[in-house]
Image (cartoon, rainbow, N blue to C red; front, side, top):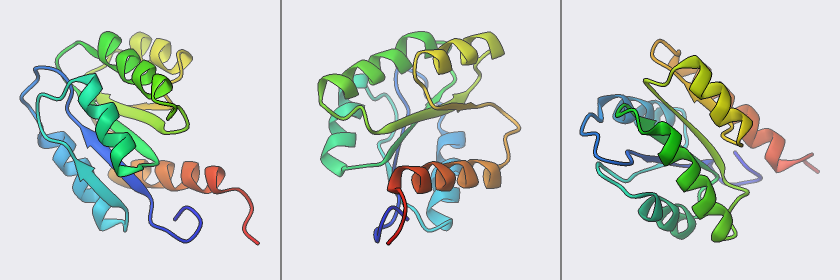
Length: 139
């Protein structure tokens, strides 16, 4: 929880990739962990993702990218969030992303990249820890 409300996470499938099983598995795991999850569906543009994130007032945006376009899509969403004044939203993601590319994306500001084999409990815990850090000390 952030403060007194549930953690809000937008899960998105940017680009032309039509494989969303992993995104749905993550969305369900986050929901089952008590988070409020907005799943945007397939074929989202970075602008559509940013608009949804701002409208839904989310804390996190998780991108699922299997198409190989991660080096374009993640930065486009980050830039869109910054332009919308929403760069406080934590951007993370996963998919088939080579280790060197994941490191480069993290260096540019992507908070975390989860690759195949990542444990669902680990992803849930990571989000909870980040949310607790963002909430600051409780009174």
